[in-house]
Length: 288
Image (cartoon, rainbow, N blue to C red):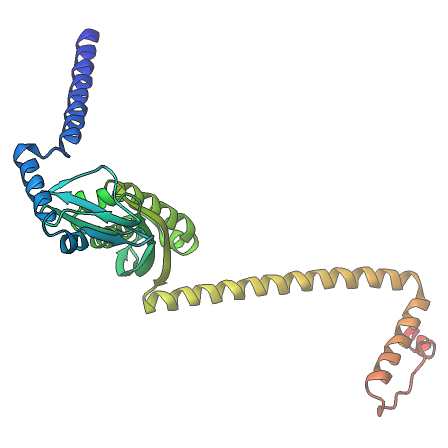
């Protein structure tokens, strides 16, 4: 059993090596034109020599600092690296080239109707920033790199947010953006695209859900307010109990408190006339 497993692993390894060797051979042969191709190149060079002033102007091409040119000679990529920036030469009859912009490009993800893991329908949109880091891959491996990245961003947004709860969607936007960036970067790497940043712009909830969440938040605030008020009443009653015990131990403290209260009332309402009645006069009546 062990030998069978080992032989299977060896066969898989040999198969991978053969595939890699075949790809390596194909890469080596991708720039070869063959006899007929070189013949056409010589004919093109012979055509340039007699028409030198005019043909020379047609052969000179310019790409800007943020651009690169991928040259195709008879349908094959001539070099494994793009040309530019600056001047480069092409043959007028056999060469064609494609300009690739290396600057960072941003686009908005249209609002997507997404069903979250807890069965809530929300509308989410975002923005993606990406750039082309390998011009040859962006030209040879995908027909339209920008359009493909936009479509992939929409599907990735739905797939990632479909695994999140509503609470996670509202509170963990940074983590969702990071996971989307990693998923997009892995998927677009064969296209020569580097996804630099993904941001969630807005999350729109249904009106009924918004009213329900507002009612829940209001009820929660009212409950907290009642709890705080009850705790305040309890603390006040404890303080009053302690104050009464202190006043009971010292009768003169009650008289001082009475005078302090009179002073406060006189300061707030100066037009009010107060006749203080000493407590000692009432003690005889209280005994009876």
